[in-house]
Image (cartoon, rainbow over all chains, first blue to last red; front, side):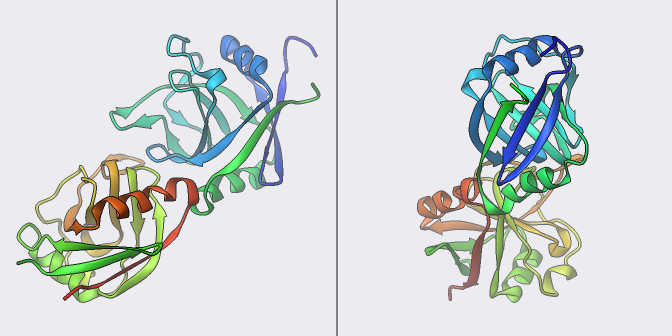
Length: 141
Length: 138
């Protein structure tokens, strides 16, 4: 594996998708996520942030960790980390980093590749079907 | 004494009083809409709350909020003007959309069986949709 072009594989409810880590735009976060893999956590639907599912990964939680490639609105098909909570949000529609106090910021650290429709539909189903187990691994690693 | 409604979710029953002083038109329309039996789903913008679609014709006749609020206190049922949707909060909640915060009308407040109902509503975060039944209690 070269220093650039690291990919991760996400599995949810029998559906798999691949995402590319944004090593140039979010180098520290991409490395932190890469070092933490594999991650296996419960995916739930967000309550404040719109059309997205989220996991809380203890290994990614660091209130002092800097934001990179900063975003507030989540583009569908992106993975976004709020390091203060160790929260990774995967958006499938209109979504934004929010909490009870209002709008917030996150690091956009990876984007799903190709046709990820089936995977994003699985994320969306969590709202009505309840929590599901999400596994994130190094692709080819 | 305000009219009362029974709220049943997942085998748990509670009683709510209509907010007739705060929202006389909406409360009356809600009362006329009963019984309601429909899907209760976890909200995705408004925090610790669930939403359902009340249906019927009566709430459509009330196109304006009454005594509008943004915060939804735990145990309150609120509706949107026209009855397009209703929410019940089980924790910190504020009525929000993708574009920001909006106003709602308080329709009823749980007065009996509150703690157990709120716990049941909170389970939707892990378990997803449930069924809700609201009927006249008197």
